Length: 93
Image 1: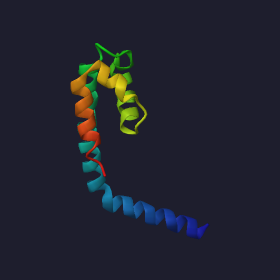
Image 2 (image 1 turned 135 degrees about the vertical axis):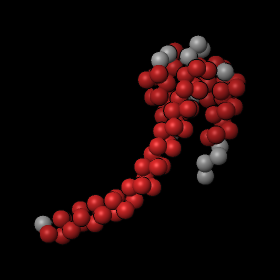
Image 3 (image 1 turned 180 degrees about the horizontal axis):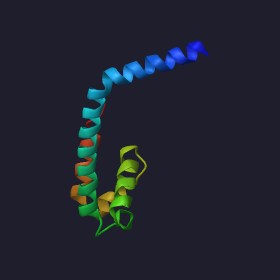
Image 4 (image 1 turned 120 degrees about the horizontal axis):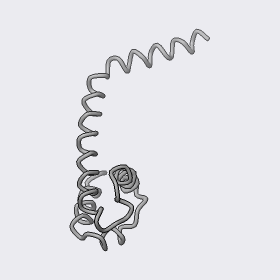
């Protein structure tokens, strides 16, 4: 029991030390991810039913980020949106 409590104290101390960096990253991530969601919502909502409202746009943008989408369907809806997604998804290592 004592070692379990000690491990959680170490985790809490680590999070406390990293809080500023993590919160800054979280804020930046939310801004950039929100921009991508808005972009895909405004570009694809007239053409694709899966982007009909903002909540579906967020869900589908997450699915696109992990690779669960049809690139052919995206390209058929909007060539420009497909190229933007292809360029930004190719940047990661």
